[in-house]
Image (cartoon, rainbow, N blue to C red; front, side, top):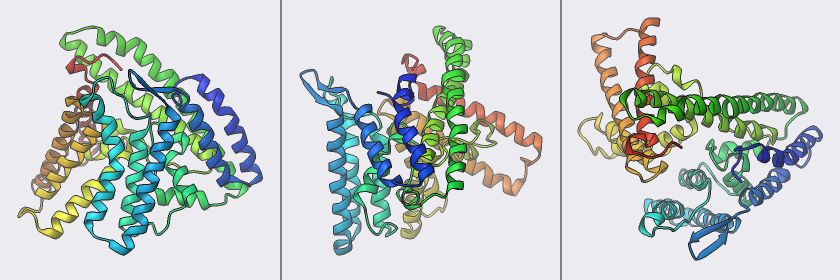
Length: 394
């Protein structure tokens, strides 16, 4: 069962939601209920049988639990060994081991057609796992609780499409005992987010798809392609932002303040501003765990003569990996590299403009910046959609 995809799911969700409201009012059993509700919803969400090959079928929930056991061994093993062994080699080995199931799920269908190994949300769970590995390596995570870890990795409102939370932030919410006033505030926030989710996903996105996206995808000329580009960008935002709103809203009912994922991205005045507003938890994850670590290592090691080259290569690596994370199709990788090129170009221009002061900072300049940014982003999403490769509308 795909979360937030239809009203049947919301009907199933009604029971754990009502119990969460009761627990919030009584201020009891919050932590236990997060764990129990997550286990129950995992069984429901992964109740189907997965056809790994045409001749091999396996219960999907079984695959999820095997993955959980594997990642637990990696994380608890790394946490136990690191204080005694340390070193970068152990850290890199833990990262590779944590990534291995995701890599297999991505490349198995290519190496062995008609093979499907993976489950909905494996990418997001893997990113949370790597966040824990990095937290242990940086000594920000001193100990692991199996109950918190499982709940964090598989927290059912966010398992399928994010947002991507951080272990330390999640753990703080897990331990925090809400007051009655805080529960009321969380409830108010949850109601607003859930209604926003219904507006975005079940009304606006549906209307865009039916009356704009599908008609635009039927044509093959330049005008249809341009129309499709804007339609797909609008549809993707409202559909994805709606799902995120549902996930965050349900999280708040459980006392988990899952971070926001969108902040009016199409009002961004630059490509840098856009990535601070679009899929915020993913871009922040890549910024912190890939880009910043690469630039810091390059700066400390003096790998390059130019102080800017580390940033440029960091952007190429970061967004190349982000594109690859979405899938191994060429248009995903091109999408990532395209955004890396936009950000590199913006950095160069911004540095040049500080000296020459050609681009101003008034309202008109910001409006022009928004128009240019939106069009650049929409073209990138056209690449991402696979439309130029002849992939059917998703």
